[in-house]
Amino acid sequence: MNKIVIVMALLAATSSAAAQAPQAGAKAPSSAAADFLEQFDPQDTGAVSWAQFEAFRRARYAATDRNGDGSVDKQEYIDEYLQRFDERLAKAREGHLRQTDTRFKALDRNNDGRISRDEFDAAGERTWAGYEKSQEATRESAAASNRDPLKMPTSHTANGMLELYDRNGDGVVDRAEFDAARAATFAATDGNGDGQLDLAEYTAEFAGRLDAQRAKVREAGGRQAGVRFGALDSDKDGQMTFAEYQVSGKRLFERADTNGDRIVDARDPEPVATP
Image (cartoon, rainbow, N blue to C red; front, side):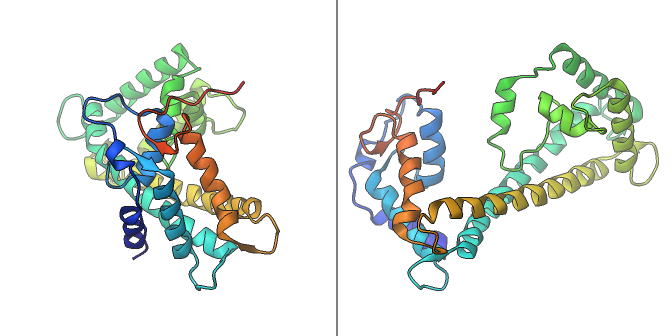
């Protein structure tokens, strides 16, 4: 219901933005504009004007005001955010699970439908070699992982290696820790204890980690939403007006509208990094 109201508000907003949307073959939007359009351009027109965005925000504010008293309290704000966040987390979880079959096949080098301990350990050797070669990991990969709302740790980044294998929390992964963690993971995944992993076991173990990570980031997201409410409730009366609510919206729009024409589209250059 809330989604329908918001989308209808977007469609009803009068603006020339759609007419000025980039045509096929035009340059891709900046990363900031792309992130903004992913959230606020459900029709994929390639452009969102300030008028459209404001209509979207008014509709969302109204949907957030669950008791219809004309203002938003802290719990309403958190609940609305978590409702949207849950949708993003569910979509991300599905995406991760779709990749499980590909990862399983990559580990199953002899294509017998099972991952033996030797195959599992061979993958571990490759992971360790990559970690030793570049403990800085790939900053590009680390940045890309930030787009994942689940923030699943990956062995392709230094932080991911620490989260996965630094069992004593000293900020370093040594070979003994790495091997012990890998052995424990194999044993925990091998549900029937036959010394090899089938796709169902491999998927079930990963799904369990996904769900644990989801609970972790959801709890953190709720806390952060509460902090944001406190910052936006400028008069500290426990109620957020639309004007207070829209302070963050204006900031969000201006961050993407880097050329200042009140339309977010591919013509907005990348934001200038501040030192």
